[in-house]
Length: 223
Image: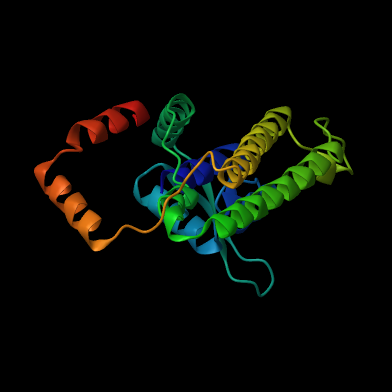
């Protein structure tokens, strides 16, 4: 996965020479909301793959006491070039959002009006709790690094990213509340499940490609 590749490559570049355990510890300490968790297996697999691709290389292998030997890595010239390329590419592009809610909402008509509104409001409550937690995290941290109080340090650009995530959650929560209100007021009719005749008509329409132009327009808008 490109995100793990960029993350591990960037941390080896920043901390290197560094061994996998410290890379994983640093990733765990970030705990950034909206970012999928990167497990230990993924980190060590990425280190092995990056080494095989010539983007990082072994700096040393050492063993302390009776602990298993640890291998430290550093970035290569090729790795620096790949890191710079990936960094610019991913900051530039606006990738489509892979949100399971989008898929589930496509079948919202299967549920009744009361259940849909209840689920939307529950989702909004969950998002508001996340907003409160992250707002408190921002308030308890600082963008000034102080020796002995490292646990309070959060770089300014990371704070900005956290604020972006809060804004995204807020927009999502407000949409959920607004949509629940529209359903209750009868402004948004989700309908019900389609019957056999309508299903047959939809199948025929799909075979004939009647929706092809609409689908193409949708893809162009999202690209």
